[in-house]
Length: 72
Image 1 (cartoon, rainbow, N blue to C red):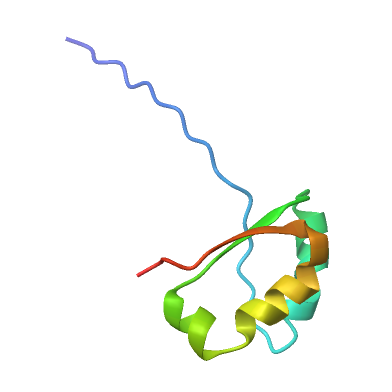
Image 2 (image 1 turned 90 degrees about the vertical axis):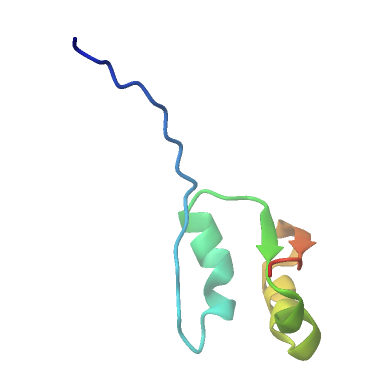
């Protein structure tokens, strides 16, 4: 008996960048991916123990529309 495999897959556009100047390059990455709004996702320690999220939000400006810091 032949079986049919049917499925759907949607991929979100993404890019992983690791560099000293990565934060300043975020607006260009968002443009290249065709994005207009960004939600920052991080863990509570990166939010509370560093200024990374603040710098990311500043670099993104009005494009940053949300923050979720509950990643364990």
